[in-house]
Length: 379
Image (cartoon, rainbow, N blue to C red; front, side, top):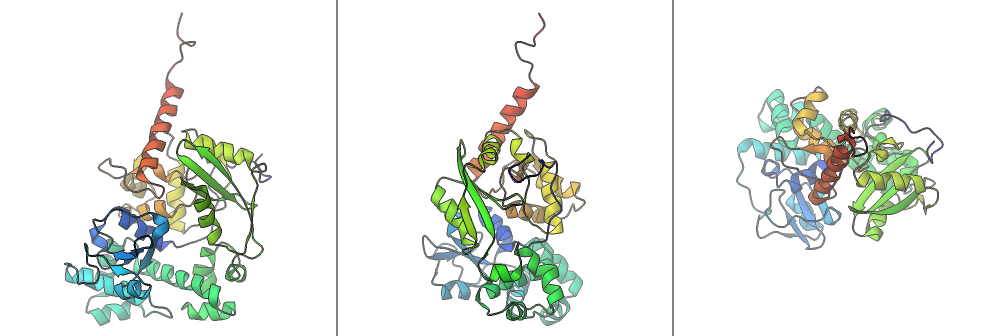
């Protein structure tokens, strides 16, 4: 039995839908993805500078990064243009890339966005051609991107609006049904409770020191909802608390002792963390990716292309990478077991060095389990 009063499950539960566009953007920043030129920009709080995703400057820490749709948005937030990548100037991009960037900006505006058919007509392309090129550049379909933008606006509106009704209308949803189908599920609790900063939501957390650094684990009554890896425990806890500032968040080292032990063992290459119950949410696509990740045996890896093939979406390699980045339960959903097709590690939310160390630890444990011991040797 687990600390949550239920037997340890064997697989990932069926979960709700969520869009996490910023995680896809973060992957592009980590990979210095030139294909995202003009599609978005990012500001770094520690330097006060904003850049293009392909900038060759030193990679920032995730906690310092804020994303913007336009240079004007970044400047309005108080960031200065980078002198290296010059994001305030027109980039050397082809006409289609500029069109995709324009579409992203259009869809990113608050309120009800025009349809893709209307946008395609305005920019002078066929709807089919625009949809295909948008998917190639951004990594998700225009419809998925638009839903993610509405969800983001809904989050902000729920925090600032007087009522949920106002928030739904401000975010651009045409009806409550559309909001509950596509937006409410990104919140993880009732919209009214989210609007009030998670008021009444009970979250317990603990931390454990591991060879990969300190790991902070947060749990609801249903299961583990957040796992963070880093060097600064206070910072990790602050990040976890920030999403729901009015939730009841309590430290519970004793009550979550077995959870912490399982996660610590997972950080050292063992599979015990995979047995813990989860309380996570994702889109249907993300859940398919996460379930595929949990099927990768410890000590082995797969490429993003192999995962895409396994889930029946061979052309969605970048979307698979985005789903890996959207995973908020490190170790429990082992996104560190996915590499690029060329064998390189690719990005990892908690650092490429941590990813490499996890893979080495799992390979070591897997090898020790298959190697015969001296005691078992024939006499």
